[in-house]
Length: 35
Image 1 (tube, rainbow, N blue to C red):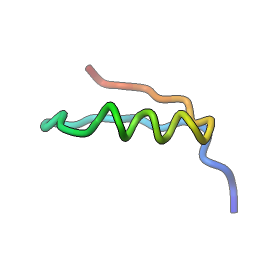
Image 2 (cartoon, rainbow, N blue to C red):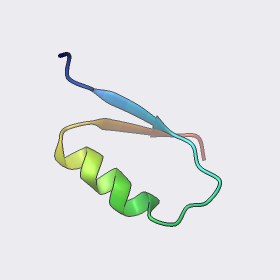
Image 3 (cartoon, rainbow, N blue to C red):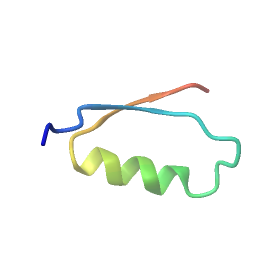
């Protein structure tokens, strides 16, 4: 299975998005946000 290197995050309800982003970051995922 290929490792996920980047993720685009686009949400309407930002509740929990910081924790989600931190979790992705721990796995070395680059995060791109739409706003």
